[in-house]
Image (cartoon, rainbow over all chains, first blue to last red; front, side, top):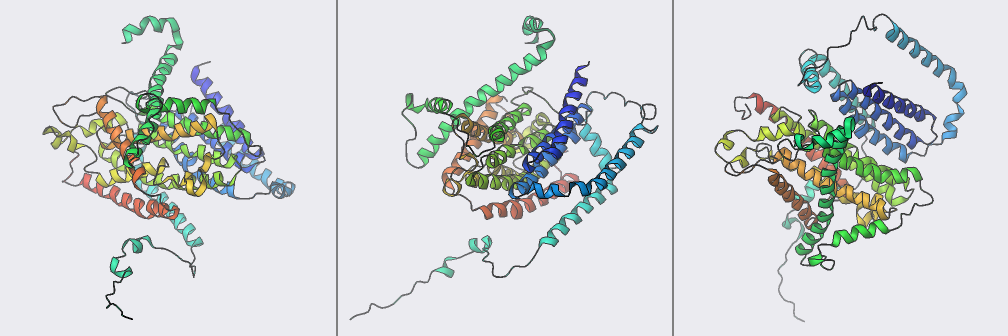
Length: 200
Length: 349
């Protein structure tokens, strides 16, 4: 077995086990940490495909930012697992249906003649000096610049919506404005009063 | 070098590349640990002198063996695992703190060609690795099952995610003008230009055209490493020692090592990205690793200086500085640099 194949199976095995643990483990914080492990191994597999930009971005965005905030929330919630598990059997048919549908779709795409080795031959080996990051950037900002900008706008709208949903004006909040504090002058706070000495 | 090592390489056969890489890793980590040990002494001495004290002066000549004594003490102390804690994660916390702090050094170039892994996307890799540093703190705080550590880890999570954004934007400016993610190329791109030809390389480095970004990066670096005045994560007066409250002995020492290794990392990165790395400031002086060491030491001194000078920030003001000051400033500056590069006034042709 080639060394690269060994690395692939090593990463893939950890990834599958970790992904299974995400849904089977009882503690939500442990589940979130297993999800981090899954992302990390997915990044490793992408590295094997010489897609270093995708791999590093996956780790940076999902592991470094998204999952940190996820953990942040999960740690503060008092999640009662038994209450969540109560509905397991009633939701099972719907969940199973979705799962089976996804399985069928994946078999159709991956097993069909569109995805075989004859339809998609192995790409030629990369030349020396090939940079995955540079190539992705070139394609993204020339051929696909409009879809790319459109996607970023959709994300921006989602962000604005999230802020707008939670924004509310609260009255009676003692809010300190630091720039006001910095702008304070001596004259506004201290008054020197000259007065004649008082005699008894 | 290669020819000299050939007999040794034959001895190990096909496992030689792994052995050779291990040797190189040790050659980086061992001096790093030494630097961390003596940075703690330097910190106590510098702050001592700034406060008109002497600092540690008992162990060894002029207190020079103090870090060794501290290390031995921490090694010999018992590791106490609280009974209510989550044991596995409690041990995993310090490991996850030190691992990224050491792994990030793999792409740092020390001199011309002197780098463990000359990765094309080096800067991205660094961002990815340093973004994982927060896990050690979060896991430690949660696994301790105690109030103060939990508060500390919550603060750490919010603070580090916030300042990572402005740090990333500052780095975008650097990679825009050097047109590369490779750290060695970024250093090379600073050794050219009008001032460099005049013999004043000092002025051709990135810090001058990117002055606001240099300042933002340095301050975000202090915030990322949870150093004073941004040390609310372990603010003694508020949360005792934050995520480290329940840790003792070597587990505590690992957090300590990670913090100082990160400090040195941020300093060396600032030198590489903004201060020309190993390039000499004047044309007539030769380049070399000593310049990088000197610049790193200077920035480390700024870290200590800031700690001795400023009172601790209030938590909401840290968040304000990150989100309402740094992120707008960096966003605008990315735009300014991009326009500048495309305009006829560009100095990076």
